[in-house]
Length: 77
Image (cartoon, rainbow, N blue to C red; front, side):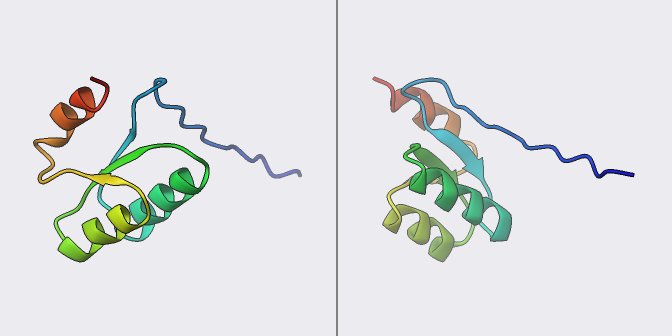
């Protein structure tokens, strides 16, 4: 019996960042991979250190989860 594999492909709208809420193990790795691949990232996490890490890697950070959709829309202006 063969194993079925699947891949998730995330493609943001042109000119818009990939929004990630939660920059822990999974979200942080996803953000890092997206940034390495040349995608813009807008992330949020409750932890100041995780937000700082995202920003130091080249991502943008939102001050709150509530504010990130607004920041996302405004980043395209």
